[in-house]
Length: 368
Image (cartoon, rainbow, N blue to C red; front, side):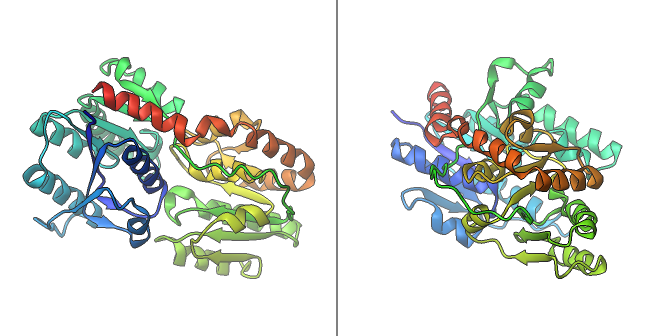
């Protein structure tokens, strides 16, 4: 008898986690699993893309603490709703994609196995935006709860290694499963302008777009041909536009709302990811599938695995606008070399195929 998989994901926005949710739920439905998604908030765009055969369960608002942000309130309400309203049995598996301590507690109350998927490296995701005391407190709480998960799935080998090296976490319950992703197999060559730079993603602090803009300013002063397109939406948009204005590079930088990124991958010359931290960034895999030269920060934990330590692109220091500006200049001046690296990366993409990665999830869930 197939398992019933209940996804716990309180805040469904428009990011990499949601792409994985769509691909995984579609795969499990095709394999005749029963699928439920318990959430508090959902993006209209994502809702339209979800399979009509799955069961969406929106939580009731039980509490709303003014001293907590909306995401945390949503997670608490999701926890309470799941506890009171969601029926489970011995054939149920809780699949946590966000706020894992809540999911792990639910699994204990409901007496069902819990698989948690770690989207970002646990250290990188906390180190940059917390003081040392808060960092230690948050990482201690997370690791304490993670120890009680039935299975921990990491999307990079570096993240898995971190958990396996913790003495109190059993190595047998930690798995590496890359993000399943649809890979563009088009073999055609693209006409690219090496002076056209692009970045795609949420306009949030994590992506360090401030550093990218400052690096671009340095490059543009030496080479007025360069242009930068920033594709995405997020809370940083207005402040980023203000920075561009203050640096007097308005005529060189364009902001585009997030839409189908295909045309940007096909038409631009260099793709840049300048994040403070990541898990396994889908945008890098997508960029490789379009053979566009890539520059990425060597952050924890996915870029160096995707780019094979620089064989398929270029890695830079984290939060180092000087290093980034020099790498942009290098790629522009040696563009044939950059295209050759991207071509090699394109040929390596089978490792991220949807079937290979989803089968790993299915095998684990069947064993629970």
